[in-house]
Image (tube, rainbow, N blue to C red; front, side, top):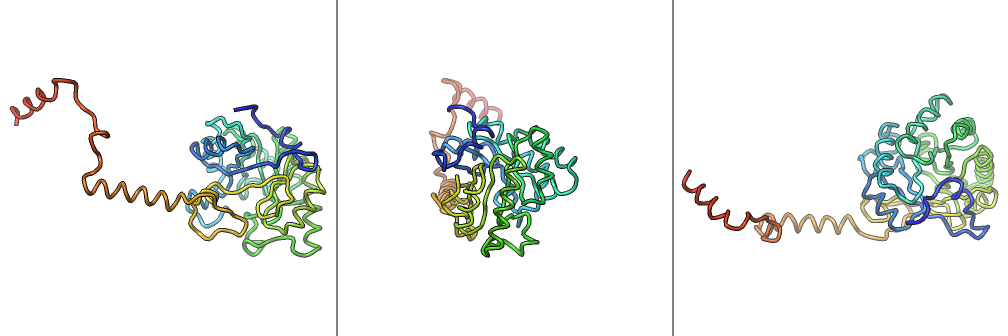
Length: 285
């Protein structure tokens, strides 16, 4: 499978230095982690998007540190070559630095090789505290889902020149604080390129254009398991929901018609034992 990927190695993956683009996918359990790793992804993100695509919540703010540790452990048990990054959920890094480090440590004990948190310069003290505890941190700028109430919903960020320059300043602050990579979400492609050129660590885009050092999408979106209206930046590569429903419907039809199970899905007794068992059964009846 190759050498296990880690934060120092990922931090050097700038396209401007000739590196191949980074590929990151979300995964939330062992089967999805195995699929993502076998597909050759560089990073697996145990995202707080688990709230919506797996647990049925309406937004990402519904999951706890317990939830994230649970799903991180399931992914880590597969021992992927890809680096495992785990989202710090809402309110797990917003109060005190001590609580922030404790929560980051919980995710590392569950199997995270790094944690990801949202926000700009206001998060620098928390990032520095986690980094000083020897835990790698990935930043996240632009459309930050945990800030949906403050941002007025899921809105593209950085459309004005002033907002774009704020994002560039935020990215520089995150890199200076020790982030080994930064996710850029929901921003104009021009802004994604500006930030990528402004920082020495790789950027990973999701709706931030083709100028980033890598790209990330949600597992369920890529495979077509998610049926809700998808953001503009998503490209579906399969239709697993519709294919899966069709397969399950055929199973149900076979059960109802008696076509399943057949001889190939059934077990037999040892030779000579069937007649004896039936005879004894009939005698007792």
